[in-house]
Image 1 (cartoon, rainbow, N blue to C red):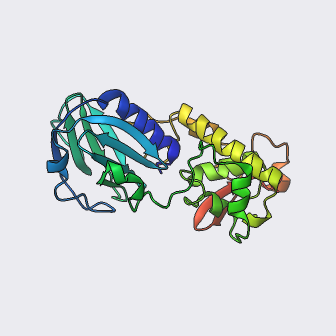
Image 2: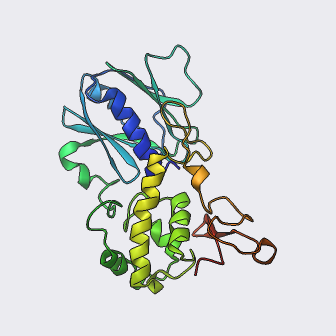
Length: 279
């Protein structure tokens, strides 16, 4: 967390404020994130203009006019605030402040599992963080046949395969449970058992769920907030995630008999599903 919809929501909010802005001042208060912020980070970006904000998987990319791109990953608890001016009082865990001609970006990360680093824009896709990523959910190459080929001979659970960023990038734990519910596939099914019809459903619901989550501003679970301080609302549309014991919205089963939505652990991650509908 944040997953793809939350990162896309952050990207859109940041782009609205600082696209075209010049970076005027940078203060690195703590370099020790998942990867250390480069020692010369401030010197290399001060004076540069922000020309483009894009996203690859769960990474936000801030392209500059000096041939560099800032790579952001928000880990488990990373947040990016937007202020009109340099704050008089900083918050605990504010690790990086970037003042631009249009506003101030403040990166806060209590667990420090996120990262902020630099890469040459021309070599971005060869960067070690990005070079092994799979297809974006909206890539036209993500077809039923592609997914079937990537799942063939995989013995892991389909939930684990959906989280494999080398197959389809950007899907996280929350959305994998929701996608599998809508596709009516048990999360513990062996990946190679997925049929052509089921793969077609997965492609459909991967896009549908992520699009709906982006439209709702993401899911505010635990620490996630949008850059303006507001929360996302897609958690109100969750069908199964974190709803253990409740009846799922598309099932008429008797709770006394079925126990409602089930929770299990697959690949070390909490997983939620309806044992009545998902096969």
